[in-house]
Image 1 (tube, protein in one colour):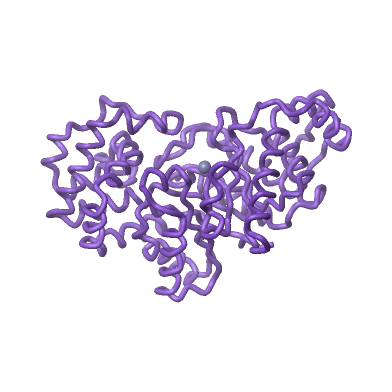
Image 2 (cartoon, helix red, strand yellow):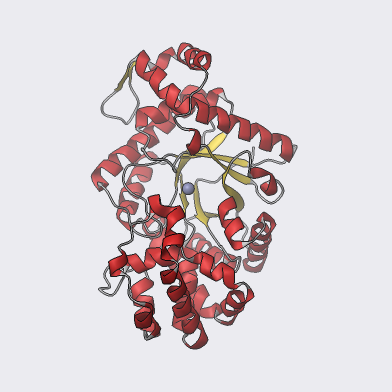
Length: 415
Ligand SMILES: [Zn+2]
């Protein structure tokens, strides 16, 4: 088994131009004593929208690692794959995020549920877990109900895992199971049942991405009850530590926080929780690097600023279509979006103030930020014109990409 390090940062590089700037943030962390492993993640949906192939992520990662002399591990994540989308990722990736959220609630065979309940008498009754104040009280009926809700999803994860293993033919890889893209969060007792089922399927899961309580909107801060989040996050960590011993799961199994970028108000709680239990963490970010490209373009002025303004105008015009696929992970108030004519008159400083995620800045516009977050399709459609501008404004962009990851993500979590 290829082993994932304790702390890892999922980074997304939609246009395959920022791997070096992203890795630079990990280099700065390593220089200060925190080893945070970069994992370049890109989903099938992103590849389809951008028109790229998984091999391009691997090539960009390899080139960045060579350029900066990075001597720690790094990985390439086939993000949110399933049986129908995984095949194009077999050679380029060494990390697979098995997304089985769509199968949550699908009926498993009654005999399978009964067999699960019979195999796991330890789950029913009072379950005392170290570091959780109140023992779980789960009736046998409740175990059956939870199994009925999640067993089909876990069986599907097993099928995807075995498919990848067969295709990889001996080439090791890291397995993540994700259940975050669904409506209801998983409670800590549900997580325990899920982990028992994952162990039954013999999936060597190293990270698991549950859906946490609260809203994890794209590219903006957490919305929800921070105190409740901290309690559940701590309980999830305790459940994982317990399940590792109970079910023989990999000792380095850790939580993966999806849509983890910019969740500033929960970084303190996460940091406290992992410090308390010496747990690891995988924080998955993605679209924020694309927003830093826009900030860098705007900061560069001239044609870069013109392009950043143009992308806003196009995104504004296409807002309904751009937002529709992301409806559950954005909250945009259209009335707060500036008119394109207004943005077209903005200076570099006005554009970057509105877009950069600085909550202290009165000019920060959370609605504009979310719209541009889902607006990468506009840049994708521009093709080489956009890519050439990334090259022309590289210094301004790289400074922002590195600074965002290091100052706003790595520092509050790991340093
Ligand atoms: Zn995700």
